[in-house]
Amino acid sequence: MKKMFRIAVLASTRGTDLQAIIDELKAKKMPGIELAVVLSDQQNCYALQRAKDQGFDAIFIDPKGKKRETFDQEMIKILDSKCVDLIVLVGFMRFLSPIFVEHYPNRIINVHPSLLPKYGGKGACDKNVHETVLANGDKVTGMTIHFVDNGCDTGPIIQQAECVVDPADTADTLKEKVQTLEKKWYPEVIRWIQSGKVVIGE
Image 1 (tube, rainbow, N blue to C red):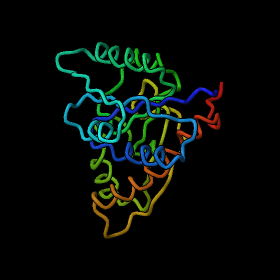
Image 2: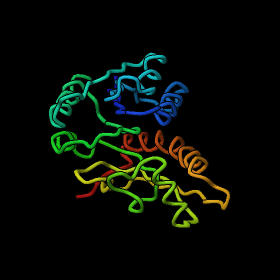
Image 3: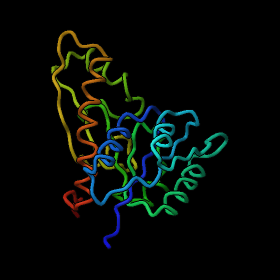
Image 4: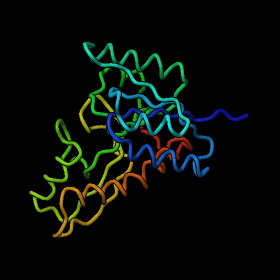
């Protein structure tokens, strides 16, 4: 029997993209892929509740009073025990330590709500990005799915998708447009990686 490709989701917020992945799993659109665990640094994060309600393993790791490396080692212990093949960041609001990133080389992916390298880096998250897009008068925005390296939003880009910025758009309406793209493409990118269609060159 062929080994299942096991993914883990790290989340700190509502887990909208997590729901898109779960929906495709349940619709049998991700054959050979299973969600092994959802981890969060926020006890009351809705992503954890989402996972639990739908029958998936969901674990809170308390970050209080812990160094980043200590917290990350706790995650590594759980993820390794689950034999995880790919780690998927969904609104995970912590910077991963080099210990974590180097333990899973080219096995961590993130989605960012802009067309990187535009509007990446520290503090560039969620509505801040959409407000900056509007303030700069951009005509187009979108989302980027990329591998995670030791920089901030600097890893190799796997997929980008665009949407038009309309004159009437607000940060909220842009967020909705970009999240629609994220929900479409995140499960697809996971399928690409599982099937070997995405390879980082030498």
